[in-house]
Every structure is written in C-alpha cells, then in structure tokens.
Amino acid sequence: MYYYTIMPKEKVTLTLDTEQLEELRMLVDARSLSSTVDHAVGAYLSQLRHLRAVDQWLAELEAEHGPVPPETLEWAARLIDDWESTSDQPAKAG
Image 1 (cartoon, rainbow, N blue to C red):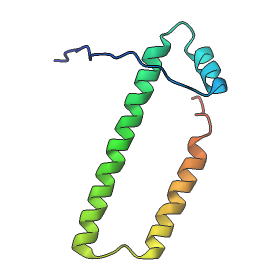
Image 2 (image 1 turned 90 degrees about the vertical axis):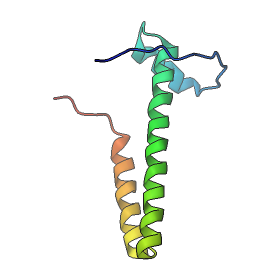
Image 3 (image 1 turned 180 degrees about the vertical axis):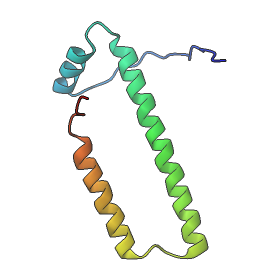
Image 4 (image 1 turned 30 degrees about the vertical axis):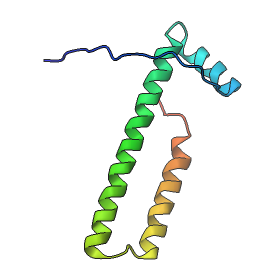
C-alpha cells in the first residue's frame, strides 16, 4: 500500500537564469513552478546520492584490489563524456 506524506516546505528566494526560467514557465504551462523546481531538486539530490554511493564503492574496490589503471579511468571518462554529450539532446518521440 502506498501512503502519500506531505513533506514540510520552506519558502526561499532563488536566482535563476532568465532564459531557462522563461523556458521552464513555457513548458510547465499552468502547473506550479514551485513544484516543478522542487521535483528537479529532488531528482538532482537523488543523482548526487547515487554518485556518492558509486564513489564509496570505487574507494572500497581500490582499497581491496589496488588503484584503477589509468587507461581504465580514461575509458570511463570517455564514456561519461559521450553520455553527457548525448543527454543534452531532446528525447525522440515514439
């Protein structure tokens, strides 16, 4: 069973990029700008928690197996760069 709980909210003042804010307002139409920003912050926090867990896991692996070879780190960096360059493109419909 799913229980919906209301999280406490706090009013804050933010300074946002004008063009991004205009685009966000256009995309969310009548929906709440606050809830959209709140959702985006939640998603970003989830990503940061995930990255922290990966960093901890990699540190454990390094402690157990020794340092990661430079060529492996370079390979991983290329994968991330490729992923970041494609993640900026809009998703295709269908």
